[in-house]
Image 1 (cartoon, one colour):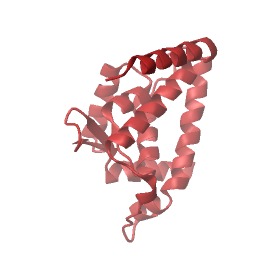
Image 2 (image 1 turned 180 degrees about the vertical axis):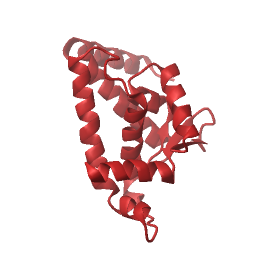
Image 3 (image 1 turned 90 degrees about the horizontal axis):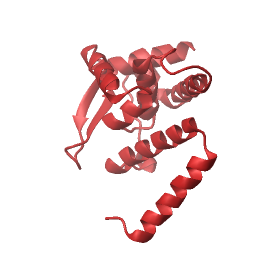
Image 4 (image 1 turned 60 degrees about the vertical axis):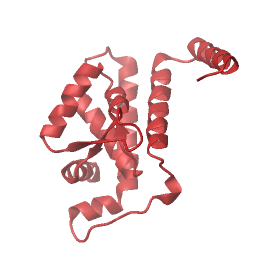
Length: 173
């Protein structure tokens, strides 16, 4: 439970952000905080990440180069975010693509993404995002798993087919 001092400090921070930040900057911060919470929920520690490469094949090549490909995905995602600052919502909507970019970036870092965080990354209402997650799951590009620490949390991650599809695309960019 949050004590009164912490609640006051949080309100001051929120007031400061509301006065100085653009809405998209706040959304970016919210997404970052969601990914941090997902990582903490999983007990993730970046120093313990050890690549497990398959041999041979396209999947192993993509896994070996995942961090470089994730940087490309990050640049593409940032570009898409910048577009939203200049064009009305819904004009360039591709929520499944935004989700796949986010999932690949997290795959490269060895983290899973909560459904809530992935819905936020899509940039559309949760109901729309959940429908797209279902479509990606039907295409066997993503899979769901439950948190070992909190059964209310469901994680979404790329399947091998999803890694191959995204990695293959990013290699060609």
